[in-house]
Image (cartoon, rainbow, N blue to C red; front, side, top):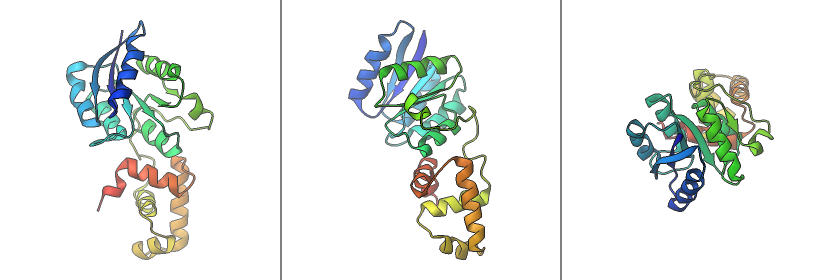
Length: 210
């Protein structure tokens, strides 16, 4: 029996997911939470096999919760459940160690398949996301580990709205250097434009830093 912890800030959504999961012969919902912090707090006592996390939750989002759960109990696999199929969201969650990424607008079979795959130690991407060619990331990889400190800082400043000239002036480097580092950072993360960078930065908490 696959023990599942549900975390979503909408009670109606949680109730629907619980009915779906409990209706499976090989699954059981052992706990529910309305935000990331509450989900993390329940993990030690409940020892779930899989935690299904909404990405957008108050107090602590699904990305931060995924990281914490993977650190606190590596044997608990994480499946991200969201309405966003953007590259920034997919990259961030997979880098944080999520075993599955499922869109809320997809058929319920996608979520069930992701939960079963995660429980087996496998990775599952929603078919709608996989069709867009999102790259798979190895589980357990440190968030942002592929970026150099300079690339990370430049992308953070880009997300904050600084122009290439502003960044070059602030860091006392050439504009061409800024362009090269930004291009390298975006390529490593699989991000294609400013909007993707902003979303990725927000999920990583970069925009909250001084």
